[in-house]
Structures are given as C-alpha cells and as structure tokens.
Amino acid sequence: QVQLVESGGGSVQAGGSLRLSCAASGGTLSSLSMGWFRRAPGKEREFVAAMSWSGRDTYHADSVAGRFTISRGGGKNTVLQMNNLKPEDTAVYYCAADGATTGADLLIDYEYEYWGQGTQVTVST
Image (cartoon, rainbow, N blue to C red; front, side, top):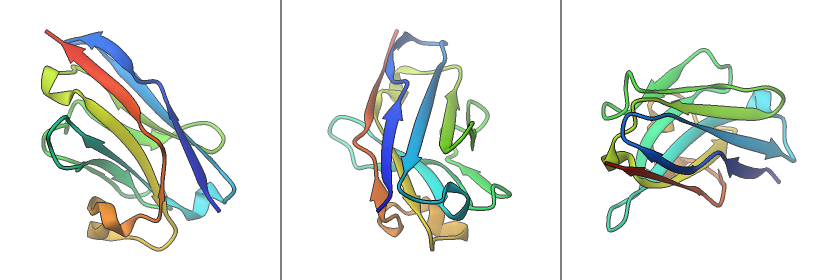
C-alpha cells in the first residue's frame, strides 16, 4: 500500500514561490507515475502536473505551464516547484500516484489509485 504525504504549502503574495513535496512510502517510487492536482473553493478538482514513472515524460496544465515544474526530488519525493504564483492558484493541492497509468491518462484524476491528504496553498494580492 502506497502512502503519500504532501508538504510545503502555505501563504504567499502574488509573484512569490512555493515548493511542494510529496513523500511516498510503502512502494517503489521508480515504478509509480506521479501527479499533482488541485481543488479551489467551489470548483472541481483539476489537473496541475504529472510525471511518468520513468521520469522521461512530464505534463503541465496550460494554466501553470512556464510557472510550475514537476520533478523528482531526493529519495522518494516528487516536487512541484511553483513560481510567479497568482491568486487563482489558491487551492488545496493533492499528490497522486499510480503504477499503471501512462501517457494522456496521467491528466485524469480517476486514473490514480493513491492520493495524499492535500496541502493548502493561498496566494494573496
């Protein structure tokens, strides 16, 4: 059973940066594709970024492309570096993992088996 724990959320002013980390345990990170999703108040959960199990393929939502970057961190961590944050980035951010999902399916939340509890990101003007 894979467990995911997010960290690094917080409050920041517009234009600032945050670095979210997702620590995985109970599984082999090298065999898991990883994703980040977010849910803003009153909105549906949406895709933010994903990385294939090999690390070769990464995907970013149009709304965050050029500002957010998903990458492997040290150990069993997956990192979401968020720069030039905007108030519309305010949301709870969730880390997700799956051992069977590949390609375009990485953009779909229900394709992921494992989820973290989420971390709040608040961006003020």
